[in-house]
Length: 87
Image (cartoon, rainbow, N blue to C red; front, side, top):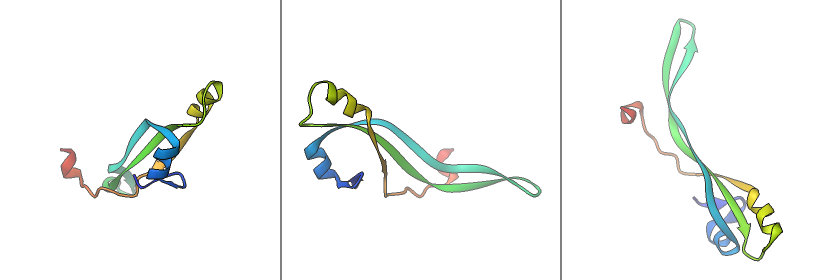
């Protein structure tokens, strides 16, 4: 992970409590409908990570409200893997 929203990771860790909420692995082998039937196609893998955050200076009720907000991080590194790795 290089950035959290518009902030570099170090600045985000300094100012916010960060907790991983969801991680999605996207890519791999897909089946597509072609003219003569189904065909298989492999897409590169990527990770999408959703973080919950809380301002370190915030306390009380407003802290629980800010924890519900989330940032989407798209990992800039993509793993190039083919369907053979899935077998």
